[in-house]
Length: 266
Image (cartoon, rainbow, N blue to C red):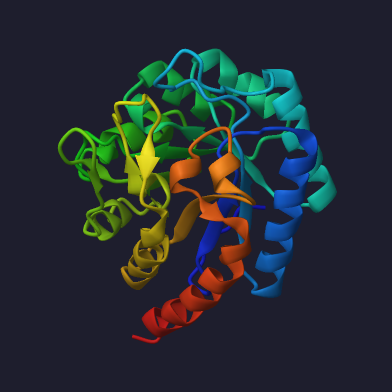
């Protein structure tokens, strides 16, 4: 069950994309253990396919059905909700048929009306990532495309704003602005630290800033954090340059919990 409440932030975490059954289950096992230990509401995240790639030879996934089957098994075996990206309207019903609890709309697609409405019709939670080119105020209109279809399970995600060709800046004013729509707001920590448009055609990143952005987001009152993680980011097949090493997750969560408690006491 997906919950957002005042007692603690919700964590959406997992690898960028499903690389295989064993590594995905291993990451899920570690994250489920940590979030249970620290009483953090948890949603396991992994994309069954990545459609937005810079280069033609970039890894996109192991196959849609295989990826969705792995997510379905994780959901069943670990008793945890799961979230994954969709890219076309036809994918909404397909992903929902595997029991996916939350359909995520990538930032570049957040204005695609047919995609948003298809996600809404499934009745699943719909997480809309704010486009790097949009103001937080304008996310009202993306949310309305889901809400007007009768689906009130909507979250909005801040993931940075394009600043020049190869940098992103996160504006923490986005949190209260989007929360004014009475929707849960998520801060995508790791994608906010991407360095896009590199000459190699592979996105770079600044993972050394993950704890800084995460702490600031919790202090600013975010409802949830989104973080991609991998046992060996340097060997990850997608977005390794900005992922958190899995072994560092527990220490970061220990830092964040007292910040959340301090915010609650204000």
